[in-house]
Image 1 (spheres, rainbow, N blue to C red):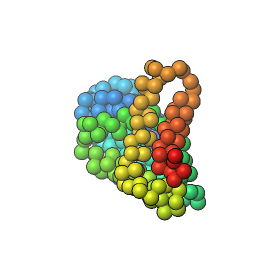
Image 2 (image 1 turned 90 degrees about the horizontal axis):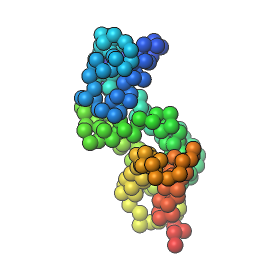
Image 3 (image 1 turned 90 degrees about the vertical axis):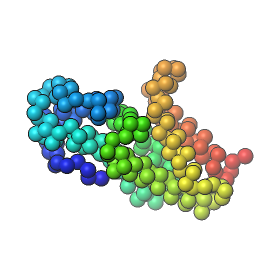
Length: 208
């Protein structure tokens, strides 16, 4: 997914400072609501460096968004090569999502801010990433139905969309969970694990 209009050299400390400062601003306010001055002030750099290194605010946003979403594609590539059952692929994907969100805590906010207030990068980046996840999960479900692990009456397309929603909401609801549930270090892992098991109980052939 190459949509940024400039090549970004992340070897320079200043470039990384700008990226690190831009991520929470874009994730919480959206691209349109963040000014170039605000980006520069947050990074502690001269305002001219935003254009110098990134070619402007929009290219910076595209770079940040693409880098965040590319972690999802990387996870799919890794799991797709594994010689394991479809159910294990789904479980592994859920486990890797927990790790991804720990390393990239703003990824879900970037994703949803694009859904509710899309920029010109929605189709090329966000929609593409969502379609790839849906395709991966659909294929897992198709394989599980073919092997007899999942019920034959399951619609893979709809079932994949349901699972995708469960996986994403597992993270968007974390903020609420932290306010309601007792504090625990493994909340994200336990919440995700239980959500996936509840889903699998409903679609597997041994469901009673």
